[in-house]
Length: 117
Image (cartoon, rainbow, N blue to C red; front, top):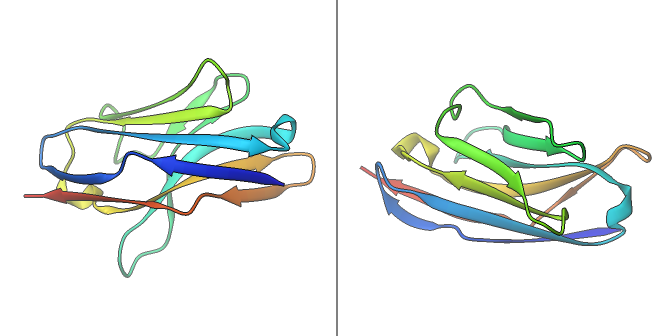
């Protein structure tokens, strides 16, 4: 089992920045990839950004150039730096960890990000 704890959400004005953090614990040796997803009211959960254990990253088109995903020195901490935030970025952001061996997904509890116009 893997446990994920997120922090860093909040309310910010359009154009502002926020940094989300996610710390993994438990069977972390099984994690191949970590990332961030978001879900806005009435919409499906969507990928925002993810990073593999090898450091490869990919981003949703809507956040390219504005968001940056990175790992901490402990490798089982992942960050999402969000700049130039827009009202359409408002959503609950979820940390995800993927175990490629067992093909299991683990999720954090979610953190609210609200961008006011």
